[in-house]
Amino acid sequence: MILIGGSGSSGSTMLIRKLNNHPDIFGGGEISFFNKERLFEDWQKNKLKILPYLPYFTTSGWYVYRRSMLTREEYGWNKKEVKNLLKQSNSIVEFSKHYFKRGLDRKNAKIWIEKTPSNAYSFKYFLEQFPEGKVIHITRNPIDSVASMYEKGVPIFYSVGAWLYNNAAALVCENSKRYLRVRYEDIVDNPEIEFKKLLDFIKIENKGLNLSTKEKKEVKDIESWKNSPDGEISKSSMGRFYKLPVEIQKEIYTALHCIQISKKHISDKNFKYSDFDSISKKLGYETKLEPDLTFKGKIKKELKIHKLERSIKMYYTGGNNFPIQLKK
Image (cartoon, rainbow, N blue to C red; front, side, top):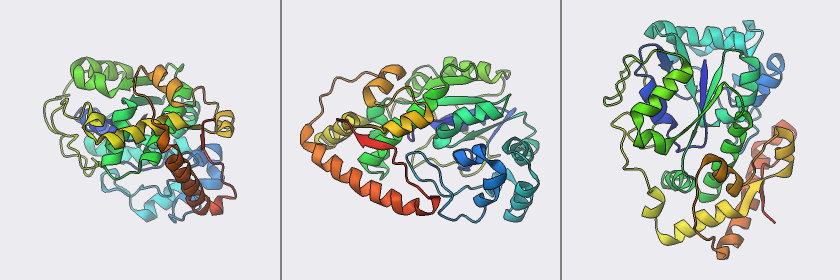
């Protein structure tokens, strides 16, 4: 039982598609389930709130994820069956054991892996409550990751917040023996070496994993955000940031420098790293670009807009602990 998490546009879809080629691994599409921290904090109180798809049951990280997609075809459950399983399960561990069994049995696999980037929110809880569970933190150069999200239609401010928050959340578990950090760039440069490390970490024999072919079709509809993550691993997406207009480059880099995770979230979540400099240094990424402070006013305005939008989305939660603030 393994979770993959990290910032969006960091290569998690490519990673799960390749791993799913292995005959002993089952990995389906994103179910946006393990990113709901409250399921770990109080399972009995919150477990049935996942069903109606109502706006009040959300994540509490950067993005407000409202839904869980537990009825995806490849997992083999319909809504009525999921509801009954939730009612009967006394813990998130018990629920997961039965829920993933259908996918495992269908493929005759031994290990399930679930990839939703915002799984990073709950890495800590997952390792605490799943004694045999492991987490894989996939990272990517921040400027390329944000550039990729921007090209997919995600506003720069939101993309920067996702990169900061998701990586900070994942790094809470960096000292655990059941945590593994992999870099997208290393996978692209040396796929055989990096996937051997992954399989060694998973503790599964390196057999039947062909990195040069497309994914077998046991699993349908793993999101690709307009990319082709099931094809050859190539360097075509490297340096994506520098393919953008100069003005967009400046705005991205300035946003990375101008915001940080809020002090309350740092305290509540025990984050060790809270801004671009500390996180990128820890992850081994260095950039020497200078921020253009003429964009700071725009970033401040976007912060206010997102704060208002978030307060509306989270109205029914009874609070809105905003996770991002401007650096002073």
